Image 1 (cartoon, rainbow, N blue to C red):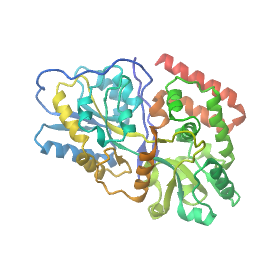
Image 2 (image 1 turned 45 degrees about the vertical axis):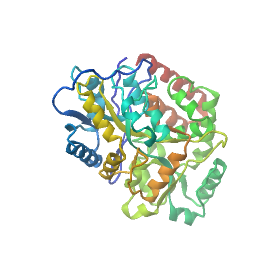
Image 3 (image 1 turned 60 degrees about the horizontal axis):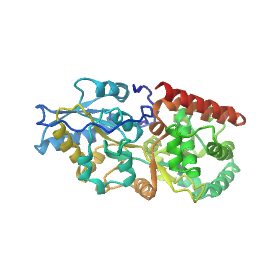
Image 4 (image 1 turned 120 degrees about the horizontal axis):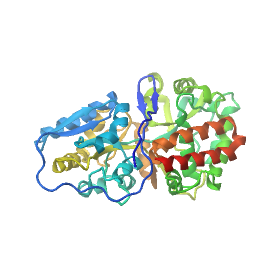
Length: 429
């Protein structure tokens, strides 16, 4: 199978560039490669990084600190994110690939592992298993259950609002779906749009609503099976998701299909729209003088009998099965997995990602503390739609969601088209 990684999904805030990416199609296969026997080759370990300028400080400091330990030398190559994601399959399938790569957990890693392109990192995990949430451990495995990924950070999604706006509107954060609908109705009655989205340049943002409604109604297991092609989009379960989404459609800014994300954030910051379902990466997009007023709440519970799953896109490192320095790779990744290294990494990043190691000693701000607690309490962690389904699947998802927003009466055809497009992509990938 050939992986095609081409799509760059970017959100440009006033002070931050946040990128949500995933590549790959669903595949099945056998276990990853074991390390080569014998001594390592000479020379430095090559770490190929796709971190943005806002993140580079952390990875540079991490490499510097490892090299100072005298256990080997790591050389960092920082590649622009779009170039990195396009070239990663070529890197991994080349004759002499770089040794280690920054990448994404879950299906994005599993696709490469199932092609035997990744090094088995079970020995690294054996030293640190208890320091990571079990949900992140699961995201770090290939299809056979071998660990092939070392998580370094993850972030939450939430329903963002401004505390002062809620106070003026006389509402409080809802916990259940019925409360959510009641709050939306009260906000709308006062001439404010309850929700916004900037879909003209970032249609993928609508997938957050699909993901959360699906895990709240049908559960995380069904959601992951659906995105892996094991369930049908043209099904009663998915129809329940859209029935719930239809309930809130009248509460969105009517212009969302023609509104950019930047404009949606501006409208949100000015109180024209009261709530925006976003990842933590969007927080710096809010004007600096409004950030202390920013808050979020957990996406409401629709069915209390469904175990709670939360979206938590997870970043980390993978290693090439072809590395000629497997011992050094494992020493380096064992260091990366430590609380010390992950504390240093997080401190050097200008973002809102949480360290994956539970023992990291980073001082968290109130929103990060809330996000961490929410993710720790979740029974299951999913990522974002294209990370769990594969990048090629995002386009039909965008089409389905925006078509439904424009013409909800066409749901039957929309779901048939979505299911057919998803199956075609899997059959030809």
